[in-house]
Length: 143
Image (cartoon, rainbow, N blue to C red):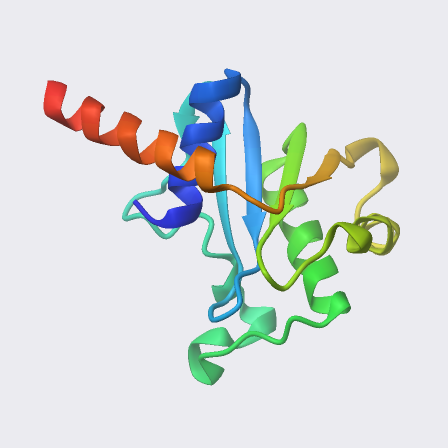
């Protein structure tokens, strides 16, 4: 389980609601974690949520992600269409709370307004990360 999946799992453990986290970290491509019906969406072999690998970004060849506002808007729009979350929380060093309005406005070029989730920004996810990590450890020990 990677860091964003720990964060989304911890958030669910603390708030007991479905949620989608999308991170734009400093030294990597964007990633996504989603809880739906109290289940982590992980995919067949864990690649679910690795949005940096979408063909439109060519991340696999470049090994870096262009964190321009337009690319961030496209990642958010793609995440909305793929997962259809009620709540989408954005985080990571390459995004700021002040970006939310521009992101939402830009996403309306790709996603009809009635499909737009609530967008929020979360600067510090440390508590969610440690809660998710602890919950996963306890769950695996009990198996």
